[in-house]
Length: 314
Image 1 (cartoon, helix red, strand yellow):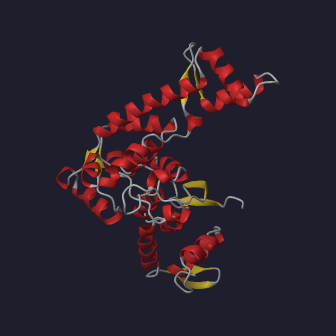
Image 2 (spheres, one colour):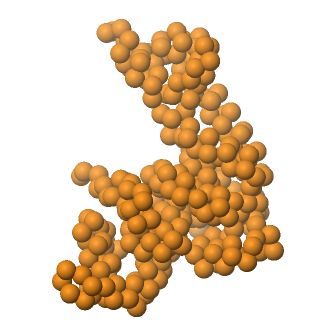
Image 3 (spheres, one colour):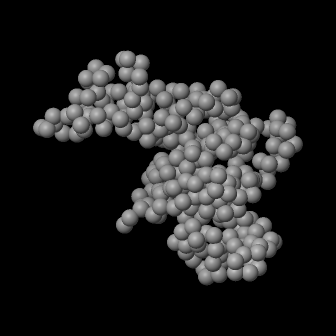
């Protein structure tokens, strides 16, 4: 079955992003069965048991499942983005190294042998050792940055920041230093999945001054099956009064298994329903305009899956 692809119109088309439909069925992000030991086996079980991703050390202290989620999630990478430093001072990603190996390998060599040969030639090291060392270094850097990310109390926010967080975001506010935020972004750009999510959350909220730079990191985290990522992006769009973008993101979030995002769809429809628009087909309620825009942007199949009962949104 071909992968479904959707185009998100973020912040009233300031960003147009293509994403592949993602189901949150990763074993790394789901709770165990009630006995505490048996992992969930089927995709549907994992989709329906996804848990929230820890944001700070506080979550690890309060939630027993969070420690396992944290320890597994910090070991997840988009391996192709991991970057190595060449002896010349230049850098190369795993994807670039693999591409070069495919071109230069001997006919009798397998792909893996070609990767090993190329790695030995350029770095004097085994391909698998290079990846392992790079991952360990990134995990150490991430752990240090995570340890210095903390909950942000209301008294440390301006009244405007406090109201913005309370009215638009469901997770509690978090804070880290600009240096740590840069570290998360660097790790995210090198394929560290947890850093993609935290960089997105921090940029979308107070620590990042509600920056639209969050979009690429939250999309990357969503594509890597982080359950909360598209939900945060939906809330970010809602904060900017971009109700089409919020509904698109929230629909994909619910469709993947993050049921809490359904409330944001209802809020977007509630606000749009109080407005009237002049269209080529005459006067229409904003809720009708929103539904029409969702269908025109190709979200009909998602709506059908999320709202199985006729009339809820169609």
